[in-house]
Length: 149
Image (cartoon, rainbow, N blue to C red; front, side, top):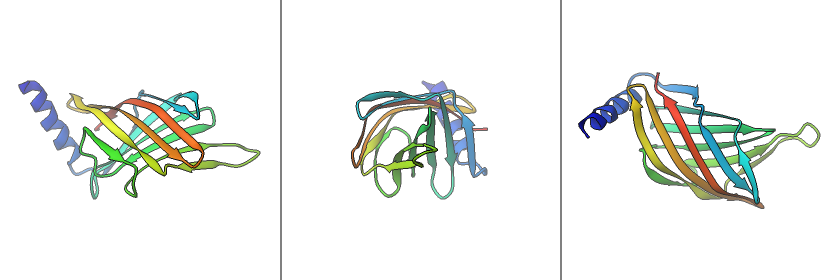
């Protein structure tokens, strides 16, 4: 228990040190059901910005589509309801018809795990769901590794 407490203190110190932002490929996993069809990311990226509050963005791509989950005032394990400060969107790219961005009207991102793996990495896991007009995203899950360096 004491070892975990030390890692969490190191993690918090790293998150609130003088650097303003960081981005990295997480080798993580993100899956969801989009209008009844299974969607799985080919690549994921997680980034964070410490100013003015800790903000994280999880970005995932797959075959001309992507997800973005943006959480402001990130505090770890919690439920972040879709709002003006917490957003989610799904984008489809098409050369013939143009891009279609579906911003979430309602839903939530639920962080179920936020723990230090070591002094420079923390694992963030959770679930998400949202609606945007006729778009329904359900059964969303993610597991990403945030590098603090």
